[in-house]
Image (cartoon, rainbow, N blue to C red; front, side, top):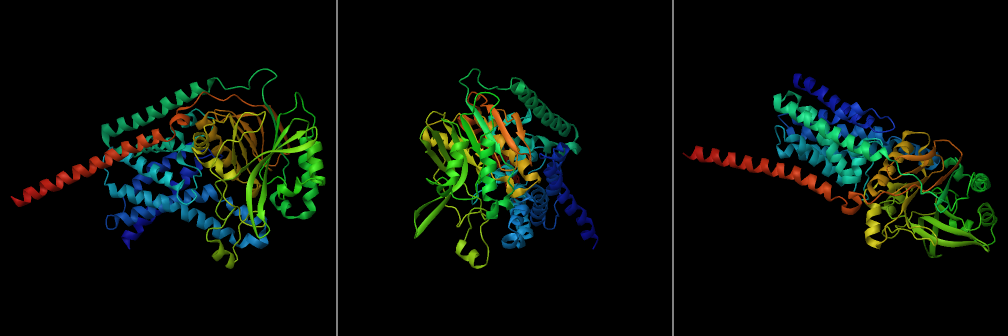
Length: 534
């Protein structure tokens, strides 16, 4: 009974560690919460001696449970949009998401404990093991790299610039390694030196990042600069399920698109993912009033990029895609200019794993389309005549480090900018859309290119190549447009050239320490055996 009483505070501390680490992320921004990581390291190091591995796993899982509950609670909003069909799933979805993803933290704590790391080196071992499992979280099944520890730093800040060198996963290793040195404060002089070393690394990266952000890239001068208009109509997701709102939604987008310009008209107009609640095949079909309305809202030569769903195939076998469609206004009307079909789909949101089984149980995908979406081809930059190449990222795709780089390598075409259309209206006025903006902005830092981001209800923004918001932003609940020149791209970043190579090197450092621990332990065991034999 006494042992159980002593153990209970450790479980509570594990929850507190995850809570603190989650609150360090934007939009909360409580950076002292990063001390949750050394607290978790201490908890795993002091796991119950009778059942150390089991204790380590559960402490890691509890920390992850709190971390992901705070970081993803807003997914409940998506299930409340169509409350009759999906409302009953909301509490189960939040619990399953937080508890399921927390398994990666539990497994990481268990794996770290298995290394047997002690002394000062355990900080780097901890960083390597946890960063490796965070990479796994971003890749297993479809991957869910939401709120990586390295993305704790506000995008555009001095510290976030490190992502241009090592990416978000490498910055995760660095963040964990440096802040976790705090656990060494009882290790005497060597421990204090290690803490000072961690602080020095953070200070050095801060100074370097501040110098990098000193000269913020500005739009290319002169009349030839590409100009954009981003449209945010503040259309709530629930309104898209009511046919009575359809005409009002179309008029909202076309009315904003047709607004007078303060200067030269835009070359590109961007509408968000799911802007019009119908298939783009239908509302852009020849002879429809919707096509005429959209055509009349655009000026000759303008290209409209609109997030929509489309279908193809025969009546017997129809496939639906989440698409970014490009159409150009010409003297003769609208003409297709290209499509990009989303490659990374959201499980349960856009498709159902084990669809036949789950459909029989009454579970449906949340997508506002007749069927689940089909997976689009591997990512490629989009080329539209008269425009520089750009990489579309539809909603969830903006979470994945290296996604844009992968498309550039596969196609041999390096994009000049990223277009990120997202339907964050699913998540209402919660922390979710604000977090999504921060995470998407890391892709600009990694790749050294600006991002044009459009959502129905916020946050829409022009993000420069440093991850900073240029030309203002349309916040949650705003209705309006952003008229801006495309910010300049940076010279190729180290991450754009080499991808996760730097991250792999950091993992090898941790791996070498683990190997050393194993070798030393084996030698000591052999020596004991020799002495025992004598």
